[in-house]
Image (cartoon, rainbow, N blue to C red; front, side, top):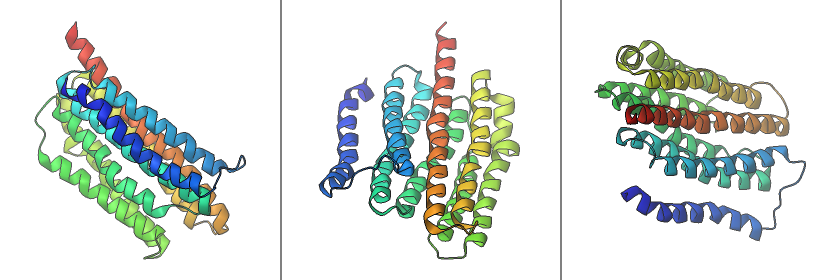
Length: 263
């Protein structure tokens, strides 16, 4: 009931934050061109993220207590991403250049939260060593720092790409062969096992889209304009899968587990 009573305030704060860049864009006289497919993708995804946020927060009232934190974190992921997408779309529509800083600020917040979800869904059914959380967090930071220093031009793109890939490989090892995987295999009920397995498939195949975007943007030798268009479309599509679909998987597991215990 406490969360329900605070939802109107959360909504007002969220939408106030979202409207700030929209107002700045309108006052600058910048409009979205009908043939700007990258800009259109920013708009579509920002709206999808807002809708997902509302859905995840409202659905916390439907699931049992042990799942509320996981579903709330899913809503926070999409909320943070939505706010950043409003700013990123303004940067793109105004400059037609990639909003690297905003994108990495977004990822620096949302990607660790996505990794926390593995820890949270296992914690909902058993005691999980805190080392699982820290190993996933370290892998995430290595991946993000490697990507950022390459995209921002602090180091050559290829070595930074390799460092980022090593961080991703470390995460994959933990969720497929590490302690988190063993806990899931031996202690999780069917709904949690299904969610865990689908989540790690997203981290495997969904996250593989990001290196493709990085490669298109910095390692193909295309013109700057073409490479930035390709990079942003790929990154935007990846965020839909890796943030919204990730949360939907957790929501489905929470609902199934709650309904099973209610019978």
